[in-house]
Image (cartoon, rainbow, N blue to C red; front, top):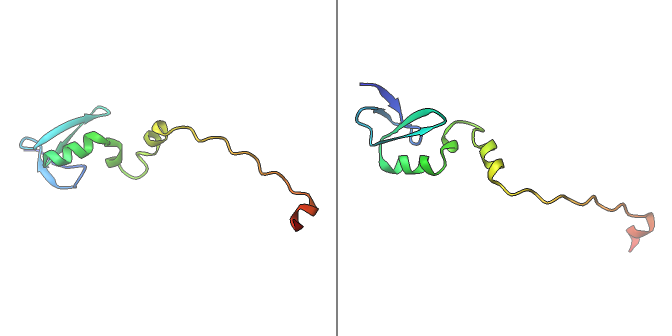
Length: 80
């Protein structure tokens, strides 16, 4: 009997009687319910701690278009 923590809801569960398990980056995670497993499987990086999903989110996001430098105004353009 090995007690583990469900990474989605934080519940302490027995790994032998867990409702499900998933592997992520070489580690097996156990879940108290199928809904927790489904949430984890959809986006595992969300449950890995503070900032863990940043690299993953950046890798999946489309590139930002380059911003044009603002054109400097001439002194007389301020009174238009």
